[in-house]
Image 1: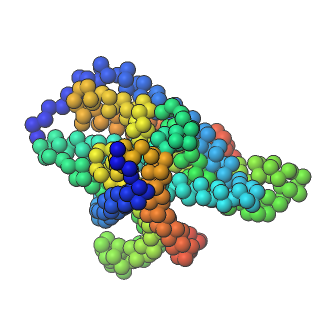
Image 2: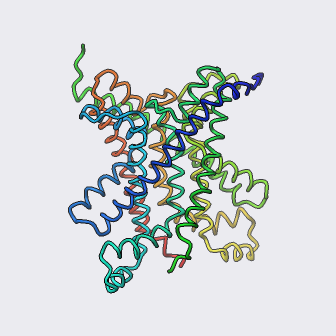
Image 3: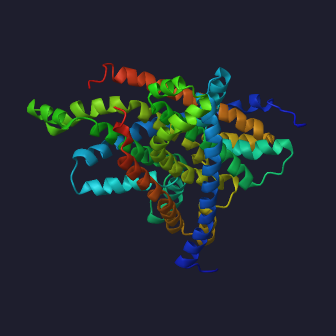
Length: 223
Length: 219
């Protein structure tokens, strides 16, 4: 191998990289918050919601879980405008991430809810809790606590999957990498650097979520 | 301007879907073989082996598949090889699949009770014998549902190879869209074809899990 590695371009391209990192972080933060919220709502529907809505949510979950994120993204960004729904690249990217994480977290949270014994829900009702209160305090919080590790890894997976949004020209880290390598012709070095940044982001995000889990659920799971 | 009928679109997408299926099969089988090697390193005796395979798994699970594809595409070229997109796609997908399968299977091997290892060791079995006759037959049963479940991720992962220029279902979708200007129909159909490929796998994974009911056996 006679190839000479060159990382001199890093200094010039740093602002572009940093902007890419900022967009990727912003995408995953918004995506995680709203995605998990959507997942909770869907899990509620599937566990206790109105009967007619359940098959709708089930179809949504199955459709999303069995199609690639890339196609969901293309469908939202290129397909929906023919129905008159137009949005910017970033909005489309974020919407795709929310819809994607919503379906996966629905399944994860539902598994946590199913592990809650039915008697607990009835016990909540006997304490004069409204069904919503019983769901929130008795079912959901312990369920979230139980499935927090699984949910965290799903959020990390969605963050890594977000590399694809560069394909609709959302200016995330991968977009920055594509841009930089088209300028410096150092494709391998550029992608190595951005891969390592993704790795660092994934590790950071995992730590952050573990810390958040410790903060949100200080008590040991009551089983 | 040429008019494209619905059948024209569907036929072209289905023809491209063959490549998705083929690439999925190659990745899954290749990934299974590399994954098995990783698994043996991961649970094997030597410390450096465990560290090596752990590092490998962390690296591939902690970085985007898209970046791995780019690196395979541009990295293999550094060795002076002319890299067609399909080669880069296969290499990256195999390595990526291997990392996940190794980790899934490690969980399955570790779910076999520790006493089994000790019992077989007390019968004078070596490491390979223990694996062959005691551990793997039990772990295999646990491993089937999550492995089938992961195959869905592999099929979906192949969609990313369109970005480095491999013409499979997703790329065909983009090409057909550019020719027909009907993104809604085309991407809708592409999604449905992926669904038709993945859903049976998801469902059979669930059914297998229920049938083998392995979650509650060791409790």
